Amino acid sequence: MQDKIKVMLVDDHEMVRMGLSAYISTDEEIEIVGEANNGKLGSEMALELKPDVILMDLVMDEMNGIEATKIIVTEAQKIGWDVKVIILTSFIEEDKVMPALEAGAFSYILKTTRAEDVIRTIKKAKRGESILEGKVSQVMLNSNKKKMRSMTF
Amino acid sequence: MKTIRGFPLSAIKGKSIQFDLIKRFFMTAMLSGLLMIVGVLIFSVVWGRLFRSDFLVSNFGFDFFSTTYFFILGGLVLCGFVASVLATVIVGFPVARMMKQSLQVIRDANEKVSRGNLAYRLTMEGYGEIEDISNQFNRMADRTEKQVESLQRLVNENKKLLEGAEEAASSEERRKIARELHDAISQQLFAISTTVSAVSKMMDTKPEEAKRYFTVIEKMVNDAQQELRALIMHLRPVSLEEHSLKEGIQNLLDELVEKHQHMTISTELQNIEGIPHGIENNIFRVTQEAISNIMRHSKATSFSVRLFQKEKVMHLIIEDNGIGIKEDNRKKTSYGMLTMKERIEEVGGRFDVITFPGKGTRIEVRVPIGLQSIFKN
Image (cartoon, rainbow over all chains, first blue to last red; front, side, top):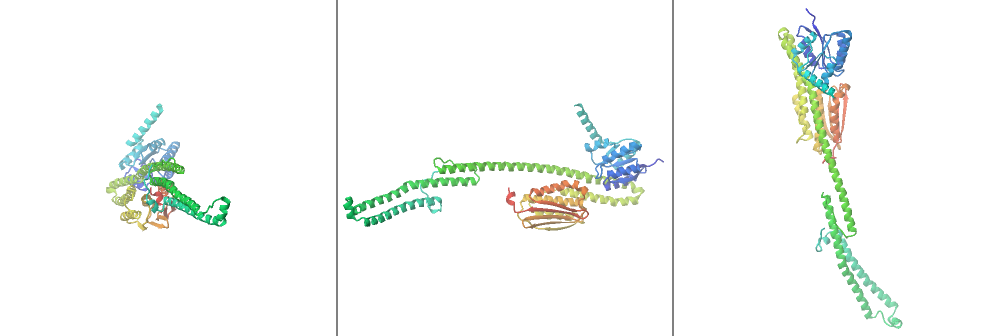
């Protein structure tokens, strides 16, 4: 049998971490290897635990998710570690979506997603399939349109 | 210009300037007449003693002080007296009446301007000093009118600014509530929904664990509820309406006691007289904000609200036994604190926050009262 997918949670809401780990623990293919409540701790733990997938919140007190993602992805490229950072947040503003994707986030889902879709996104990430939730891709397209328009002038 | 016919009696009855003037004219005329008679009598007696009539006759050819001459002289003096009285009546009265008239017109004009008819002006020509006075009066009225105009313009601009600020504040308030919904409520709902999903999956395989999660879910729902209540309190109409400050705060706390039985709330509220309603509203809003902060962030188990007056200063002290405001949370709280501070400073008061990490927070508001005349308009 294939190894379990190692997942780490980085979120400053204890309740959110608890709910997610409770749900994820019901899936046999996934295991939670660590939890962190801010970006700084999250990136440090990730570099040590080398999980396959990281569920990352964006707005956190000590170091936000974008910074943490940048650090993790840069480090992973250096040492050839295959890690997928999934942004799991309640923010959908352009000023959050674009920097997160530029920082190297693999997928971007919202906290309105159903729990089973979170698991689906984790599994797909492991297989190398990105997921951008409908609204998120809309925001991205709009942002690109704006960029194109500003380039033509 | 006003004209006055006849001689009003009221001018004599009252202790007016006009009365004094006329009386003085009479007195002067009478006194001068009397002095003339007395003077002539004394003069004639002295003259008569010094220069006997036979001496006068022998030297000058006639007797100055014979009865005939004396009567002629006396007649002349009498005529002089009558003439001076007549002169008083003919010249003095019209002058007095003219003065009285002018003064009345000036008095009326003063009255009109002081009552607010700032556009009223005097037209008096050919009266010499009176004309000067009327010109001065007009210049003064001009200045007053201009000053009042600019004052009103200022008040209007101020009002517009205030409205703008109010609007900005309310849109900032909306943003704040949206952020709060985002930060707290939506997280809690997500946590609840994932946990519920987890429980429904565990039911068959791990029923014991599922049961444990039910209590967790209950707590999560309670937390979310409390958060929502605090937010709703924030959204409530923030005006006292008909209530006094004391009543408003009391109502607010009564409502809280009902919903949060685990919270110990102690109060000591004095009725404070003579605070204009606008100021009361500002203080009430600050009270609401402070309590809402306690409910949401402080993790306090008890808090107290004291409202009292010491000399001419109103004191409002809100104290809790919560976690205090941590240094790293300052940024988050600073906006709310700033608006509270601004609201109090707007009404000329002081706003202080004293926080003891791990022990609680104390908010002190001091507002001077008895300055109502400044705020009345």
